[in-house]
Image 1 (spheres, rainbow, N blue to C red):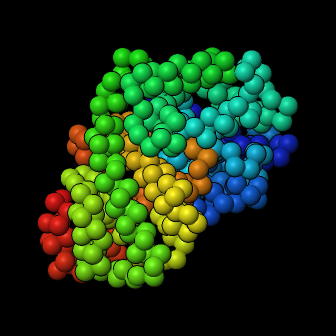
Image 2 (tube, helix red, strand yellow; image 1 turned 90 degrees about the vertical axis):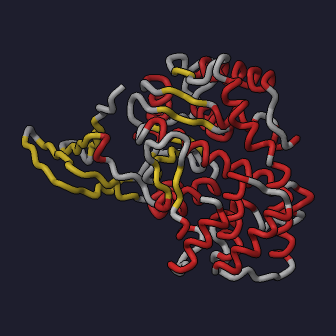
Length: 355
């Protein structure tokens, strides 16, 4: 379905601004923080039309001051270029959901499909009247495995799909649910590759955490990367999972409170006992899954989440990803992981990562 939405913003009783969805400029991190705090945000768009008393004006670019009415902590949509409030997701979009995003629906729509007492009308309208397709892959993968740390079985995935579909259709009966009972085996098979190497990934993250917690300093150069890479190999991290070596290296050599450190929760007490490494690994996998969906559906795919750590990481890394039409391939600019890498080191790094 084409994206043919036109967004209308009433600025006062007489003045109205409008622009096509394709011209909406997604939020950056500062925009998101202001939005979440309920502060004034500059709504940025290209090719904006203004109309007052039948007279029209046009601007190639506008920044419209707005203040959104919303509940703090509500889910927001990650896009290939940043974030946007749910009401700005276009018709025909594929929308991935995680569990905390489902909480946003329950906050605004009750199980009988009626608005909750403090519901926001545009959120209710979005779920009940827009033509979008919900893809619950992240929910099915998560299941209850944040507690037992394993890939849900096929039967558990099917049960989760039935539960999610039932609850969604109670609240928003017109939504399309993308994942079907027939497609679950394909999702399970693809995800099994990740979960087969999960124990090694968690051992590796724990090993890096213990060195980091002891005060060990990893240098932000190729030698420092090799030290982290050696810990990954020692934990038996293999093949595509060696990508985690680059991610964790970025965490322990970046600024003190960088997004990956926050996502991995290296600053939390009882780190290993609480199993924080699993939560971080699963969140990173969810982002990789989203990147795959962007490639499959181009710009018309969104990931709805209320997880601030995940949102912060996406902001940090999305400028370094390259998504193209090469089947099954997602490219990352390695400068994200090793900023300032000397050109002479690139060949050695590529050989090391088997890129």
